Length: 559
Image (cartoon, helix red, strand yellow):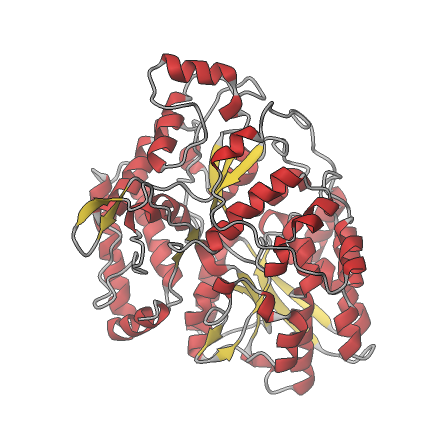
């Protein structure tokens, strides 16, 4: 993105909080009664710099509108302490770095620019930017790798791509001083090694943690008129937020023709993203499928480990595809053209629909973004489960051991900041790149990013301190509910973690292509759609090299 476009967007930031803002549903907290709390939220951690953390959390303050570029710069400047303790003023004068990352929702690179502007002024380094839409990210990265034309010194990247980059020797190993500065021991357990590492070497400064959770409108499920209609139409059980995907289907179909409790307009249930998103949209089919295909105690859910045979066309995956197809006519009219960015930001947060799965951004943005109107009625849970699960080894459906099989989708393993090998031959440039990365991944700065719109969600143990969230302005019940959905997913014994193997996003991208054909009616059935994905995956595995893929896949599963 050009600098003048970026600056124009910054100037144009203005409040859009209008229709429905401030509306609250009676008894919203009561609607959260079904929320998973088995893992709980971890106990509070003492802040290393309590005064600083309190100061940045009030910029601008929860409920006071979206943060601006001036806020990002201010937070970045206030968090420069670790940089100033190690780097002399102007030490990197003349150093020029190139950074490649995302510009989604005016977040990611936009915040990095703000955070790094005071760092640049202090150190003297200059940074140029390569901004990418999420749908374009995989293609751009893969092109750089394939043509051996890596033209960036720093990279915002997710751990799934480590097989494509670290595995091919393209990254710079993290210095020990960076490990200490960012306090990698504070990362939640599932984001510690082997994530961020390759062959025992550390490469990643984590700035994000990833899981998909279930976001729903509490006002829908405390609405007396909807409860009365639910009973009158003969549905079993009480009118409440769904706990299984079967209940999501039932609720979504029931809501057709009903009224939205806040706007009075058309009510909708679950929001499926039917449009591809550069491979990232496949995670949302996974959300439906994991409860059906992830057996407790078995890490396998994408491929057979001995052969790399795809599992994506087994009965569990086919059920998930069929359910998405079945809801098409119960969702908004043009839902076939909705990608995940649409479902979260243009629909759910803007007041359309009652249920959506997404990364943690929905819970953050609900109360801190100008575009949200659901801050007082949003509620959260881990992903819905299933009363039965397909046992791949037995080749049949079995009843869930504990009544409901939950398998939270830890989708993408979080964004991180990486430094490429391009800097390794220049000691000053190497130090500058890693200093910038350490600044972006600082412990105190991370607390701010996970509370405000940023594109990043909780990823540190210290992010579980509820008192700090309340100090920033979050309602205690709301944030306790939200953090339970996050940490409850990370620590769930049957969580679903994707493999860090070469080409993982090629698999996801071709799956999106075939799904689009299936949703458009090109294939006769969900099974035929799933078979087409499996065939495409088999071809891709052969192109990459099956023997090596098997080796890396098994290693990623700890087998």
